[in-house]
Structures are given as structure tokens and as C-alpha cells.
Length: 605
Ligand code: BES
Ligand code: ZN
Image (cartoon, rainbow, N blue to C red; front, side, top):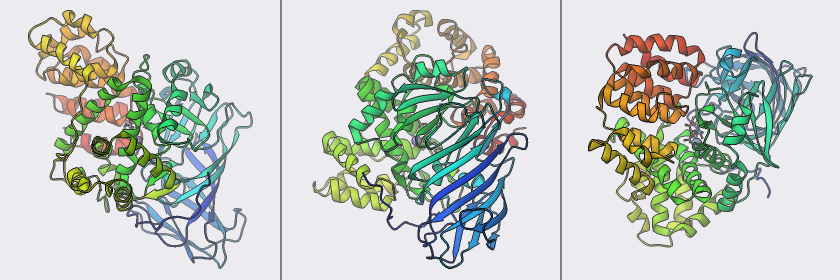
């Protein structure tokens, strides 16, 4: 299947200085030295232009980068080119403007990153499972520019090759063709042959080992974590096969996972060929693998067909959540996938209540110009986006929706898509055939309206109905121990539903009885802990304090720690305690997490 080299006209991206003009990059040759002592990356980025001679200026995004020199051509030794850095914006960084002589086909930027570069987390050995330091990047949404001068707009794609020099004994990995074992010289070469946007640029360096799962899938993890990870993700090949069966061929050749240290700020990140995942999904019972299905699904929705700007984020995440649950249904059945839908719908209701229906941030189409995209990228894109696809599915039927989605991925592979272009395509390919369908669906209300439109279809779970039965018996006075037979065989999802539905005012004695029966405080399951601790905090159930503190020190996943700090702040004496814990734990958090938590905890008295 050919990869298109042309591109559709793009809407302007309010979060990049690169602009929509003719000065576009097409290929990157990157040479980097990773220095753990100074916590810097230093090297050269050679950008090959899509249309040599088409423009007089090349504009790249840069944030907190030291630009040492710019040269004409593919080598740092080429003739020097004039450049300037525009004023620094806290969120967007700076425009790096490079004067292009007539016919220029490539430029080479020599640069260094700052020790505090927001995309990078430099971990000391004590923050890993082993005895070596660790580095990883997180580029989405607009942080690639803090470690690479680039056109940091999701609508602009490029292929790349890279040479990365790391200390001996450490393995380097990228969102590219990857090594499977240590290179004694410490020099690694990478190639990404499919064009990707800058937010999918990724690098990780650490004491990492590889274990194959199938000819095209495998796991990278710290040696101490690898056995557990290979057990947890044993169904990875089945997931890829199910995804292909649903929506067409996997276009990236290999699919590997990298299990990061627990400070990784997200659950997962869909870096092409190498999904990054948090170790907090290593539950020991394979019960949290829908997150892997999610990141895998991005290999189509997001990495093949890419949101043109962050205002179109729902095109990435909404399709991915729908696709994720189809993969899970294929592997584990409808009752399993229904649990995920119900949890997702509950999270959506929670988010809408939190943001407020009056806020345009509950629309699928966002308006993020002038803001940090990180502030506006919420659960809405994920769950309201998925709910729209479920509403469509209910009306046109799965066979037609599946054919539509498959064709959409095939037709727009390696291209950017914005909300208007998607709506036109949807109307032409699916809605036009059924008069009245668009109105019945209330399409405009989904895209540019608040909350959840009335055309949304309800979701229900038979497995959760059983949990609700146990909850009702508990509310009627049954002892927790008496519920035990009913709870045997519950997955993480049932437990999370149980904990979320517990009466909020059980009191410390009530929680102690539950804890005695079900050992929540001692759970090794991060989802269960994250649902349990807020109860403990509200009730002043001190027996969970030590476990909560340990969790906040070890885990940097924002989805968990942000609500826990909020719950902590709401307790008597909580602000002082929250600030004390945060002061000690903060060095273990990535900038993505501290940038959200700093303002929250700065005000804590
Ligand atoms: N691409 C996202 C992560 C992301 C989004 C990073 C926006 C930066 C800005 C990834 O695919 C994702 O959605 N991760 C979720 C897990 C998923 C199962 C909902 C997460 O990290 O919690
Ligand atoms: Zn996602």
C-alpha cells in the first residue's frame, strides 16, 4: 500500500509557529548524545524540506532549547545560515526562523536541551526497578519542541532516522525500528520509514531487556519487571490480529510495548511501533489490558489518520476508545466490553459535571487557541467521542459502521483530518443514504453542543448488575464477609465499580470491616487502590494512610494522583499533609504532572 506524499489543505494550527505555508519538512536526520550527568540531550537535527526552493524562511517550534548554530545542508559543518528566535511564550515556546538560500533542500540545527525540558524525565536509579538511570520522553501534545526543534503540529508529518549515543550498559529505544539487545558501543541507529507527526517522536534510555511474544510483537521492560510484563500482555498478538480483522492491516510492521518506571505520567502513549505503558497496569491477572488495546487502536486512529489540530483531538481519542472496546469484545466477549462502556459512561458523566455543561470544553470540537492544549484535552474527547460512534452504530448497524470506519482509515492513512473534513466525509459516506438520520442523531449537538445529547444510547452491563446486587445486600446490612462468595472471580472492573458505588459516608468502622474482608489497602492493583483511597480519606480511615503515601511517592500517573491530592486537600488538616507529601514526592513526577499539581498545591495552606 503506497504512503501518500501529497497532503490535504490544512486548517491553521493555533499551537505551532510552523504555519501552513510551503516551508514544510519531510525527513529528519537526528544525531543526539544523551548525557545523564548534565541531564541534557545535545546534537544536531537535519531537516530535509518537502519542496526545496519553495520558501525563503523555514519556521520551527522550539521551547527551552539552546540553538548553537544552523547550517545549510545535511551536515553541521555546512555554510552557516542566519536564524532568529522569537519571543518566548510559556506554552508555545519560540519560533525558530531560519533564512533559506534559493534552492535550499536541507538545514542542520545544532542544539542542546535544558535540564528541565518539559518532555523529558530523567530518573535517578532509585526511581527505577534497577540500579541504572533512566530517561524517557513524552511529546504529546506540544512538548516535542522541548527536545527537538521541529514543526510541532500534528498535521505535519515526516520520516526519520536517528543516531543516539548513550552510556554503555543502557539500551536506547525510539518510535522507530528498534534494537532488541545491548550495543556495547552505546551507539544506536534508528529508522522510521512511515511519516509521523512530531508528537509521536519518542525516546527512552535505560537498563532495558526485550522478550518476544510473537514474530511481530514483544515487550521491553527493566529486567526486574520483564517476567511479570510478559505474563500480563500474553494476548498482545491476538489483539493486533483482532484489530486488523476489524479495520484493516497494521501498517507499522512491528508492535512492541515498553513498560516504563511508575513515574510515567500517563497510562499509555501510542508512540508508533513502541507503545509506552505505565507499570500500574501490571495487575498480575491481565485485568487492565484494555489500555494496551487502546494504544494499539491508535495505530489506526491517530497514527494513521491524525487529528489536524488539538481542537480535533476527539478524532484521535473518540475513535480509539470505540476501537479499543471492539478489540476487547473480540477477545473477551460482549459482557467484558460492556463493563468498559459503563465505566466510561460514568467517567463521562463525572467529567461533564466537573467541567459544567455550559463550558464549550464539553463540545467534541474544541477551541483551544490561546490556551495550553493540555488544559482542554479531557475525558470528553474519549467518552463523548466513543458515545457518538455508539449512537451511530445503533442507527446504521455494525456492518455499515465497520465498513465506513475501515474505509476511512484506508482512505486517509498518513494524513491529517479535521472535524469539518470528517463531517463532510461522514455525511457523504454514511448519513446521506438515510434521510433524517443526521437530524435524528443530533449531529450538531454532539460536535458543537454541550453535554451528552439525548440521541446517546444507554449502556448497561450484566456483570455490573451482579455487583449492584452485592451492593444492595451490603446496604441492607449484610456483613462484608458474607458477600465474599459473590465477589469470587470479580475482575478489576467489578471491584472499581463496587468501590465507586459504595455509599460515600460509611465511616472508618465500615471501611475497616470492608478492608478486613477484601484487603483493599494491601491491594497490588493500582485501579483498586485509586478507587479505595478517596473513601479512606473521606472517612478518616487512618489504616490506609501509609499505603496512600507510598502510592503517591511511587506512582506519577496523573489520572491517579490528581484526584488523590484533591481528596487529600478536602480532609481536615489535609492541605498541610498534602503539601508535605507533595514536597517529598514531586521529584518523582514528570513535568506533565507537576504542571497540573503545582497550582493545586501552591494554594494549600
Ligand atoms: N494519547 C493519549 C495520551 C495523551 C493524550 C498524552 C493527550 C498527552 C496528551 C493516550 O492514548 C491515552 O489516551 N492514554 C490514556 C489511557 C487510555 C486507556 C484512556 C491514559 O494515559 O490514561
Ligand atoms: Zn488515547
